[in-house]
Image (cartoon, rainbow, N blue to C red; front, side, top):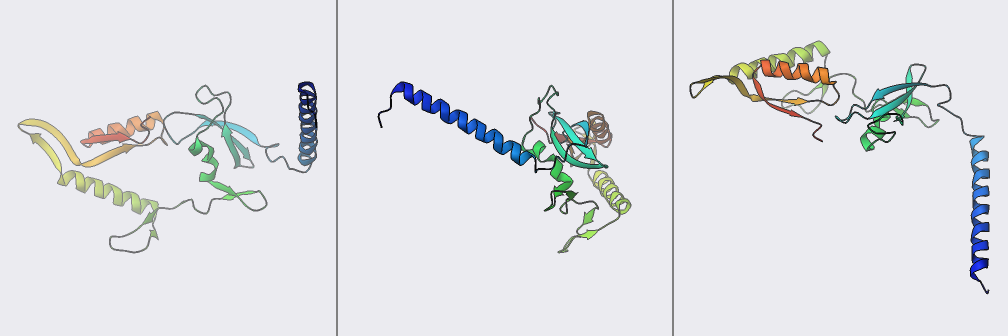
Length: 195
């Protein structure tokens, strides 16, 4: 086949136009059969809780259930994009069943679990019991390792406890946690969102 430059351009243009038209036809035909699950959902803007960046997220809520999450294109921080953790935000609570309906994620823990020392299994405990156990252990550790003086200087500290801040909390909550830890004499402070 003798192909000139002009005939090559004509052939390329015709092929591109045919592919575009075929693609539009396929999309329209398939769109007629796909249900639009976000059509009646209410949009609720929020902030991603994974790290300290503060990306905007839109949650689509239908009948009190989050059916989808996506980046907020109007948010100045991320402009609609999400990292891999933010993109998987929906899957913290829900997954899709075989019919495409959301159902609670069976891997998500909703009750505290405790494994006793030397035990080989986890057991569910009551929230009040777990909270009391945590506070008792913090108080005992602080009291057993509290330093009031070091080389003649008043220090009022404990090196036996460390505090790790959380990006799942608001700035105000982290501020209060920080103040609480400092009031207990904790000097080892860090945060999970070091960006």
